[in-house]
Image (cartoon, rainbow, N blue to C red):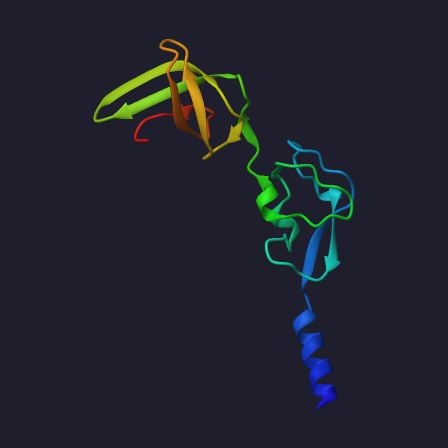
Length: 138
C-alpha cells in the first residue's frame, strides 16, 4: 500500500515544473530565454513552459526567483502612450483615416482610448497588427 502511494506521487510529479525568473525582468521588457529557469512544482496561473513567455512583454517587474504569472505578460506593445497613430473607421463602404493620439500603451488586439486630433473627441479602438487603431464597430 505504501509502495503504491509512493509510485503514484512520483508519477504525478513527473514533468510538473514552474518557470521562474533568474534575474530581474523589468516592466515593458521582452522576455529572453536567459532570464528563465524551471523549478519543480506547479501552481495554477503560472507558466510551466518557456514557450509560454519567451518573446512576450512583461507588464510588471518580476524579481529573481519569482514564478512567472501568465497574466503578467502579453504581446509586445506596438503603440506607446501619447504616440501619434492612424485612426481607421470602416463601415458599410465608408472608409475614413485620420490621425489620433494614443492615450494608453498596448499591443495588437488591445483596446485603448485614443483622441482624434481633428475633433478632440476621445474614442476607444482596437490596435491592429500594423499599429493603427480601428475605431469602427465598437
